[in-house]
Length: 132
Image (cartoon, rainbow, N blue to C red; front, side, top):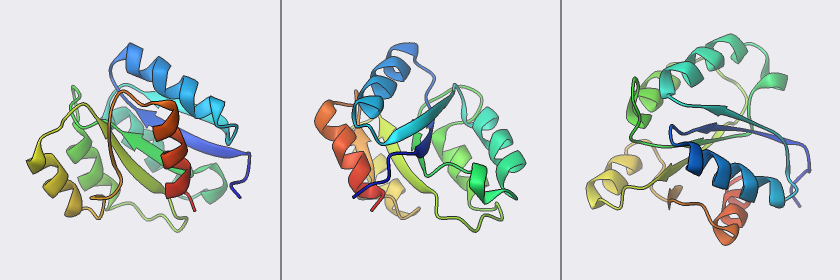
């Protein structure tokens, strides 16, 4: 059973996908807070601040791949260099259906944690499965 007080970070530049994703994640009842960033750089800067306080780190990051400033790949490259001791689950949430993106995701250990958006109610429940 998933605790009901999970913290999620959504890294997504499209307002409509921000809205849809937050809506379905909140409907699961598992998330006490969902913080949204419009690009990977801003999210990474936040992670730099939080990395030494595991109580404030997210339980899960939902990451778009194609964004301005930093792409999802840029974020992943920088994230792996952080000194984090809490398990933070990352799920790629992208409009890309390109096979090369799925293959590239496996290089980060995220081949199975790849959801094509928009997020649906059923896919939001799959997100919870990644937290177990």
